[in-house]
Amino acid sequence: MTDFEKEIREQFPLLKNRSTIYLDNAATSQKPRCVMDAVEQYYRDHNANPLRGLYDLSVEATDAYDDARATVAELINAPKKEDIVFTRNATESLNLVAYSYGMNFLRNDDEIVVSIMEHHSNLLPWQQVAKHTGAKLVFFECDERGYLDPNQLEKLCNEHTKLVCITQVSNLFGRVNDIRAFARIAHEKGAVFVCDGAQSVPHIPVDVQELDVDFLAFSGHKMYGPMGIGALYGKSGLLEKMPPFLYGGEMIEYVTRCGATYAEVPHKFEAGTVNAGGAIGMAEGIRFMNRVGFDKIESVERELTTYAYEKMTNIGHVEILGSTDPAEHHGILTFVLEGVHPHDVATIFDSHGIAVRAGHHCVQPLHKHLKRMSTTRASLAFYNTHEDIDAFVETLSHIRGEMGFSD
Amino acid sequence: MQQSSTFYNEILTDHNMNPGHKKKLADANLTLEGVNPSCGDDIILNLKVENDMIVDGAYEGDGCAISQASADMMLDLIIGKSKDEALRLSDIFMRMIKEGISDEERDELEEAGVLQDVSHMPARVKCAVLGWHTMEEMVRDGHTMSEGDIL
Image 1 (cartoon, each protein chain N blue to C red):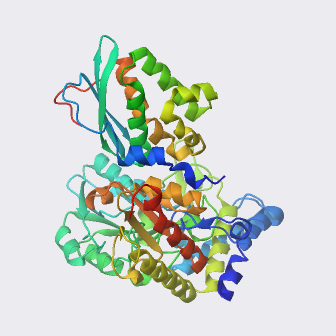
Image 2: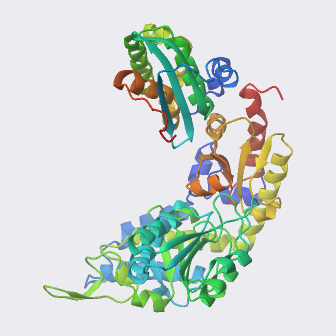
Image 3: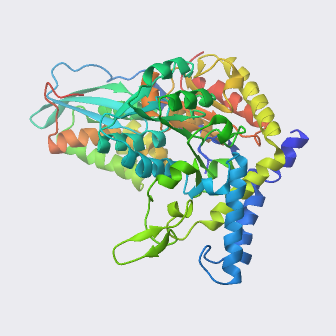
């Protein structure tokens, strides 16, 4: 192990205390000690219901929650912290946009463009919007290497296009999509651009102003934070005109017997007692990434990905999906081992203490597009080591033999 | 708990690689498709039943080794048995996976007994029981597909 690997792993209790080789980081990341401590410290020393109490402790809780929002805003270069709405996860963020924006501003004859590689969380909400408004869902297909061509999007968009919803990094290919170009095309047609950042924000610098996206959704738990907290960035003009998503406490100004005026953005979208502990944990996860530095995160993950990619391609009967350039995988290596079902592959990995994902990875239409029933996926984070990859490759090279193949 | 890597033993892999019953059955009178969406396992089970006896059976489809081998081992066991006996054996198999059974009961399952360890692998239970579950629906409830049903 390199000094960097040792120093990083020292900070993750689970990685220190278990022998599990964890290669399912696209599903969720492990949590560093500092995140657990930050959450514990909040509940131990500062807990009160934020945003409403007229006493010191609640003001402290409110400040801590607000600071967390500022940290999230800074990470993605949002113009101001009020552009960040805390949610449970990226799925809820996308549902918020679908229910609050899509259901209210789309009409019959409108069109929603989604890419074929969307996670179900950036597809099913739009299916619902289409069903309830009469809008039409239009699919933007990729080539077999997972490339989405802006020229193709240009052809799919027209004056009926009202929403374009595309992930920045596919959870199957790991490839970074040209979001800036897609957003520009959407805006030229007067459409709103929704970006799923669940797989990009934890691994690459994301700047919402540079990309010019209207919405960006991401989860805390994939970026070293706790589960149950995520964020939605929205351009303030859009958030202002959208009605609330959930109704109840902490999102109102005045309430009468038959109506209410709503609180300012972002509180309008955060009904009920908020997940302050989660938000504080998410912010600490971001500070942890900032301490390591995105340059370092990217370079370590690229190097590990390339190391794994090259070793995997030396094993016979392994086909890695997506780009043939490992630099375009960002830690995600989805593959097929000829003759062995992915669930059997994952079970054998498990018997060697290696955690990988198998199945359709919540992208069933993409599997159909690629004419695959299911696949196996190894996904890396910067705390993985060369030893992890060696063990993974060693096991992979024996699986066909274990399943009765002679070569 | 980690599984022993010997889970994929020779009996299981042999039924998967060289299945005895993975073929068409021209004179089947019961046909049903079973699908396990989590794995994408898909089998079409065909049985020929005469006077409450399962006189022949076969399956077609795709899926993981556990689903395919389990269906093949099941057919080894039930062909030539009465419907009631097939259901009794299926009940033993289901209990083996879900709660555990005696050694004597396991012996009754013959080779299918090698799937006992699936009881420790919750994500794979559906794969192991797919063929059995499909057979139960056909034999007990008389579910079958007629020509023209969309597969």
